[in-house]
Amino acid sequence: MSKPALAYIGVGLIAVTFNTVRQHVLAQAEEIDVCRLLGATTAYVRRPYLYLGAALGLVGGIVATGLAFGAMRWLNAEVQALAALYGIEFSLVPPEPGTVLLGALVPAILGLVGAAISVSYYLHQHFD
Image (cartoon, rainbow, N blue to C red; front, top):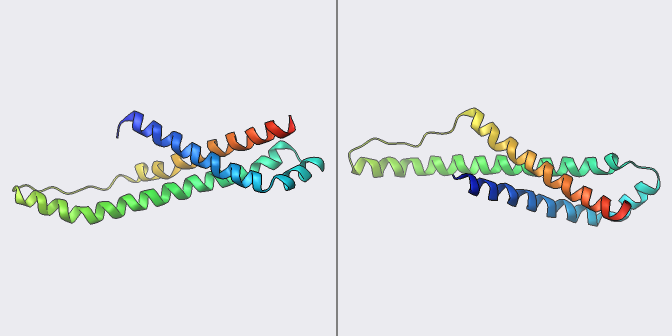
């Protein structure tokens, strides 16, 4: 996959996480206001949403990796049959474990970034 395509996917993930966390923040705006009035720090208010963003990214990365493995397994038999028609041997090779781990951690980090931007934006708009 080309670097610009990966960048677009990353920006898309940040945007989706931003919007999802923003909806959660807006749904709990009154609770956040009460917590701030009682002396809650910005870090205290921000922390659960950061966890939410990281969890959304991690689960999304795991699901995407699982779907990729499932599709590769399903397509492998078809690819081998097609290669046999041309008299060659070919099969799809699964990625290395480090690549799979990276495929789960990078979306978690991007989800964390999207959540941080969303919560910071809300808190800056309402409490600064």
